[in-house]
Amino acid sequence: MSLKFALRLIFIPLVALIAAVGALSRPENKVTGVRLYTLDCGRAELKDMASFSDTGEYDGKPGAIAVACFVIQHPKGTLVWDTGLGDSLAEKKDGADNGGIHMTVSVTLAEQLKALGLAPSDVTYVAFSHFHFDHTGNANLFSNSTWILNQAELNWALSSPTPNGVVPSVFSGYKTAKTNMINGDFDVFGDGSVRILRTPGHTPGHQCLELRLKKAGTVILSGDLYHLRDNHTYGRVPDFNFNRADTLASMERIEKIIKNTGARLVVQHDLGDFKAMPQFPAYLE
Image 1 (tube, rainbow, N blue to C red):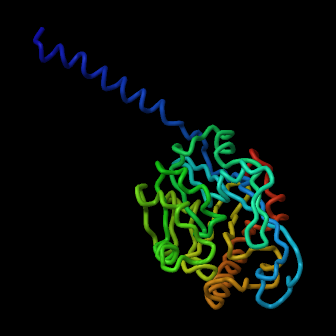
Image 2: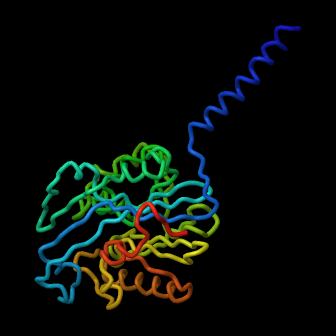
Image 3: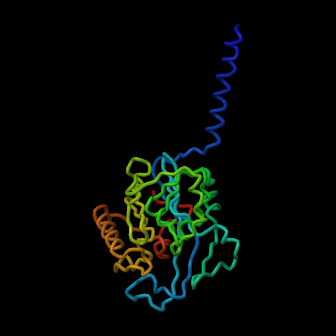
């Protein structure tokens, strides 16, 4: 037996073993369809909701909003949509106050991922409706994921002076992560089941997420196109939106999609909409 042949007998099984170990180290995505999980990523209580409409309906009225994150499992991978308030806030039992807003986190995003058998490193993609701090608080957990970023949104968030509500340090991980820069609608998995929809107005690069589920049908996650169910019902626009006309145009677009597809709209910050979703770890499919 030649030395070259003997080495081949050793090398080939060794390569196969290494490949098998590598495959075992990556969790197999066993889902056969698309699943939508709704995660609790915080809560905010406001002394005055006036800013959520520029036509005065909420003036002087207190209120509360949910802060949701979403995990979408697909046969080709896992997407996290919005990353909520920072997990570090969970360490503060009494929460934190900022400008008349009391914020709390009762369970961390990392803990909820673990309940699904996932570590942040197992997440294939992370994407954001926009770059306000309550949607990007845990972005840097996903250093091994591909970040799907809207170029206009990133440019705005990094502009000087820093826009209100933006904390660049919490999404600084994009600098070293793999990125996919987009400028419009985007088909995440390439089969039409999970699509990012361009809806500027709240911010320059704001986006909604459309899912086409086998049993639940079409579902649209609003981002901050609408903050409250009444804002959807009555077309109310917050006074802190970047561009009012763009907001109304984006609302019109989403309304037409809802009409054409019979979609279920999930207003991400609305407490009623949040509670109406399957309680984690249950899911829509």
